[in-house]
Amino acid sequence: MAITSTNSIEEKKPEIKQVESLNEITSDVIFKTKSINQPTKTNQWQLLWSDEFQNESSLKDWNLQDWPSDKNSEWQYYTPENVKVQDGHLVIQSKRERFKGRDYTSGALTTENKLEFTYGKIDIRAKLPKGKGVFPAFWLVNSINGNWLPEIDMMENLGNSPNELYFVVHWQDSNGKQKRDFRHFISKDVDFSKDFHLYSLIWEKDKIVWLIDNQEVFQTTEFAPSTPLFIYLNTAIGGNWPGSPSSTDSYPKDMLIDYVRVYQKSEGSGQ
Image (spheres, rainbow, N blue to C red):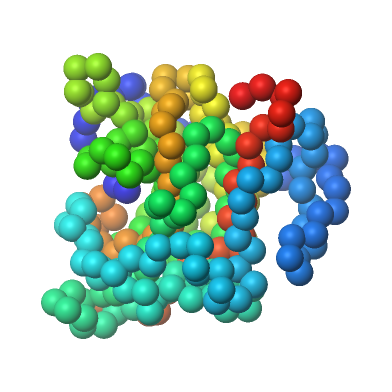
């Protein structure tokens, strides 16, 4: 979801920082047919839910969106046909095509009413699309309030700047004023559209922590939602924040997601 002008916590000054993988103790864990390395620094996290996207049956755990986006003057029509599982990855595809009054189609999917949770750790391993006006995002929103707040933006990227990411939490204060705390992250060397990276979020009662490839990149204690949220994955095209797509850019554009995993703290470890 785009960052819009609101009453907000003062913006953190962006840092130029290279993303590096941390050296961690790991253990081999098998998820379906995938062998992965799972960090086990404290053994405090217990797997609650996962999707490894081995075949099309994975999509039964998601709500595939089918509507013309009405947010932030975006250009895309979300269609289920733009979401598929291929070669062990979830593919969210954006196309330049005329469809039901829109010039672009794209994909979005949610876990609303299928998986909604309060507090935990979320891991998403993904390769982002690139291009002017392309806006991939992973976010957590609620199904109660019509304005979707509170909302945690786990990862947002503007495709014309593939080395930059945004991490945001939005909420309303007791007076109904919209607020946010966020970081605009800039990597000196990493283009997030060239390879897969692990995007993680740790959501606790008193803080939220964002990580890339197991390295902490932002933490806030200004606000942490206390109500259940669901996962929303999408790529938007155009709109107020990313701007218009380029008419000469090549399409289709794919966001590839290797897996989505949700953990909660094991009994006795505290939350």
